[in-house]
Length: 521
Image (cartoon, rainbow, N blue to C red; front, side, top):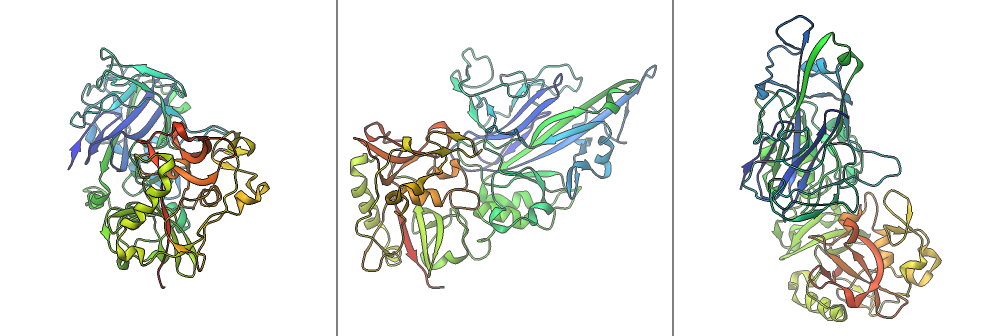
């Protein structure tokens, strides 16, 4: 399936429902935030390309003169594609170099000591509507193709200034005030940028286990910027662009000038990467682009060769677990899993990618047993034994010291710093136990702690939630009546904590069974 959206300052062509480009721009402050929201229920792969146009007119002259020959203000397709140098995003090359003198683009979003920024989710969830979420002075292509620097064409609330939205904000679209549903939305958070945007040559130099993640990679040969991860349902990328500021040279032009940026966005289903590899009539894709797209499609650069994609339903003998990277998603015998770690000796820890929904907390063990019994005989034949009974220890989240992903101390957050002070809890690590029972089980708090962090199975809080943003139970005991440990979905991420199990939402999560499988090398 495919459909297109197009905007000035903001355009998107979309192959599956559920995505929208956001462009928050304010010409007075020169703030410009460009990112992609997946409001649907299926994963996307995204790319964006920026084009620039500028012309100037000296005092007393009648006509404007473009700074790049052959470009025309009212013909956006003639504008100059922003192409950076191979090793520096801040230096444009070839025809694009003409803009170095007059405009500075700030790529990515980074604020010392701050979590990711907040945005207002789109109200326009009609995937046949080509409008985009253009706020402030940004102009949607459908509502206004004007290039006079004055005409309005916004389709989304906000004035386009930096940090306009924050935690706790909401907007009532009754009326409607803006195109879309007449509902109230709460502000949501962009994904945390794991590393600054980079060129594809810089990406190629990264260690393989860091090549897939939440950051932007720009093919400097074509100007296309690619999100280096599948954008899951409900996720929103970090910023590709954070500001577009004119230089002193532009402000000292004797006369007047006109400057604009065009945003061309494309979204595809992960099984359509050949759409991104199609020949460009004006430029040549970088040689590493195919490997990059395949890595994003598979969830890892390490399993590009020989392993199927995440949605390819295969049998166990069609999978090579030894080359899987932590966090890889795969489908085996009608069940989708996340690969957690290689435990050595041909043993591999994996977990069901989604929680088992609709199960009361008191029924979690029977639900896990029933799930295991329903697995194919080929899968059960691979499962290794674990302890018949886990010694979990018991602890409340309030007695631990927590840090979030920005390494700032908060309560009930990303990782505990002092779990080793509680040996019973810290020592409950899942491993093969000869003479034990081949079965499924819930992970422990200690398991999740050691599997969380960059390059690990759960590289960030979003990835630690189960599929479709679900919470899931842990086996570690909580030292208070009617409380239990779980990975929770509040605050937009997979944080851990002990909680009253009587209040668990049966629809939003449940037990998430894991198994250790053995495969001879």
